[in-house]
Length: 94
Image (cartoon, rainbow, N blue to C red; front, side):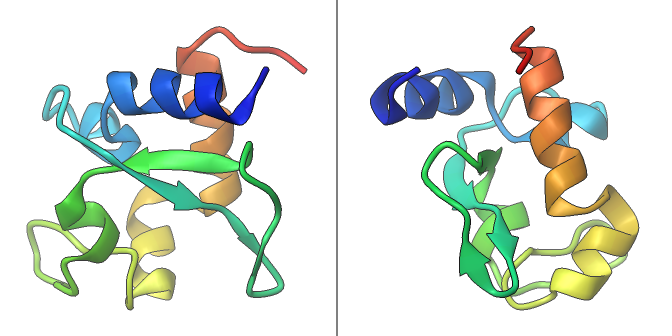
């Protein structure tokens, strides 16, 4: 699968956190999964809405990945877990 195909699939899917929380489909940004503070590659990405991706908020209702990685992963799962959930929702196997 090309990067362009993957990005289109996950953007059309909507935010993985919103879907998991039962909030429905929401417009999403592409978030690169990090390993040792570095991007793995463009295919290791997850869809996150602007609130869950980069809003900078940490409230009882939601927490944003940037800059709150530890709290984000405590509430919603690790980036790799969310990546696997994204692939599962799209019926993509390795």
